[in-house]
Image (cartoon, rainbow, N blue to C red):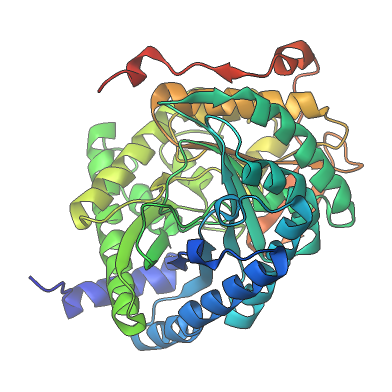
Length: 455
């Protein structure tokens, strides 16, 4: 049966768009570049550039056309590509950096703000391509403006690659040093995953998975304002009833996202992939996940009950999305990035939200420790240990978790980092002062949990 949405449903979203900050956060085209391998970085980069520009050349125009016709804001148009460590396997780090520059050039030519896929999947070990990409990460993130990177260091089935995690502590520190004039912004373009998904449309972690089609359109929706207004309408109902209110809001938001995705797919001649219904906040007032948690009855995010409230929110969002579309995917749920959510920022500055409580809340939200600034002198083994903790949460709980952490050069606890735009600004948070050095130096692999043996 052809997909259809009534005009009444479309009109219902107009109020959400005008008054509740509802938007399509991103329309992301995934492009397979595994057929672009050449004998060196220049040839490979040129092939990638040509294919990406040819495939996504009309993406931005199509997005603008849909915005005008339907009155629905599409904030970002983005591209994801196959993991570069696979495409460039066998090439040295210098060639990987060249490929990164061509990706950046392709992003600018296509008119998108980010291109994801400078990525490696190392959950069970390293290929030659993975090692070269690791070596190239700091320079690539520092020299390019649009290129985003991700590394998958663990899965529930494979366990955790602690050798990779140990190396990433140093890579993140070096990336921060190379972009110190911009508060270490290069680190904001690097996500470290456990249980990474192949169809995530959100940056910085998007890549085009090996199981995907030649190209695909994935949609990322964000509607914290819609859910916030719905919750505020019912200040006294019990939590079971509140979950139903949130589910209904998520249903409506997802229907809008699928409409946009189907239209874009048809016009671009590219298969429709998934709708990622994620409450992804922005620094704008009224576009905050933290504000939803406060509307549920918390004085400040971080107080006791915050994890339970977030668990309810995350689950209700997923259930509402699943009712609305058979193609909900990506990371769908509630994001709690510190720098991108004015309510989270406020909670940190008031002392309500500590690093440890933030980590606890990541057990029940989408992704994990996102856009968290820590002191610039934080040791690399401490950064690695933070990644290991978060990855362990994902591995044990069979969920995607991630870390996007910024050791802000020259900054101390209480200072601020300023990124601007969607990346926002964040207070520098304190980390535990005691060492994890000997633990991280053991390296090797943390074995998969017993419940991974479920074949």
